[in-house]
Length: 99
Image (cartoon, rainbow, N blue to C red):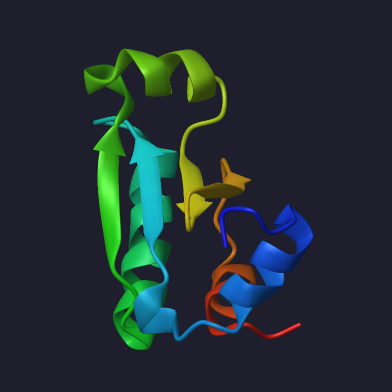
């Protein structure tokens, strides 16, 4: 899939089982928006069986440089899905491949 157009790759990802997708939440400690985002990510990923991880922007210079004005940031399959506020319905729709 590496040679495939991003448009087609995105559609292929949408067809994937939610358990084969991945979510990354980028934030920092003591951030109320990050805590709110984590609650949504935990709920949706837990219900769908989607693995997720937390990355601390204060521990990674590259993430800090790229996202410091946007945290919390949610990546789905390595691509930015949203920032600041995480909408539960939108994240669920993205992970379950609904259009």
